[in-house]
Image (tube, rainbow, N blue to C red; front, side, top):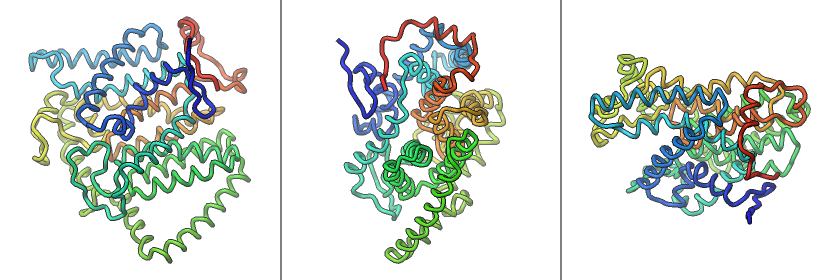
Length: 437
């Protein structure tokens, strides 16, 4: 007997819920912390899972689309090269597993896209509500010390925490852009007034946590979303105009009230926002990233094509001495991490599908859900200038690719389908698990 669970408008079989729980939702840092608040165990789980999922993808290699097979084949070339390098220089099969986990997001994209296709997962709305509810639960449990002061907080295990009074790390607040765009789309595109409150809630969350990288990424995602939506006729000009005027009036009223009730607050946020335009400000937190870029980029250019790999991971940190030896360089910037460890080839390989989504953004007749996810995915390029993207982000890339591959009913007669890819899909085994919407 197959048991099912209803979540909102969606009905999942129990084994589908377990699949998503262990391979997707647990990749969100604040959720895994609620389940098991020990960083070392969580990191070990992610490493073991990455090996397991990579093995599953390789085992099901023949069931993948041709483009996915080529992509994984390139990853295989990188892995074989690193294995030989490790055996020759260090006498071990793979000297540092961390270098695999840095590269694994490329395979994780394919895994999530594949299981979405096999099980017909249409879960964007579920993800939006998941992050909304998860934030509330996490802040109820751990948010008692929240304040705007940015005071440092000493902790034995920092886990998903920011290390200051903002409580939650930027990488988790960044994921709140998904419900932000989802509820905005529900309100501005579909005219659902009940979506306005959760949208405003997401906006407040993104604002008050003061992560400037998230502010910049949100504005970028919003701009991309509006441009693609107008291009695909998903937003009526009249409704957009009314919404814009309402937003301007509401913002002006809010600023007036805040300035009267909490004097100095507006100046405080304006000063925080100004650091986006001056990330290398002497007393700003972005200066360390600028220092890393200044030091590591010339080093990366010494081995530009395939990077320093194991040698770079084990070399002494040229900037600071507070991290243990042979624990890696602890990069803050996603681009620099890939460029230093895996070179230009690895950098382009890992971000290939994000760049591909940038190309697909110019398409017409896009699924509204794909529009939301393209806007969010492209904002990751901006966020990568400040932080290494979380693994769950790359899973969302896979979901976005699935929505692009999934033809909306109203466009089935108009869109052209690649016959080779269609034949591969038809040859897959019958689907035993389905999501009924």
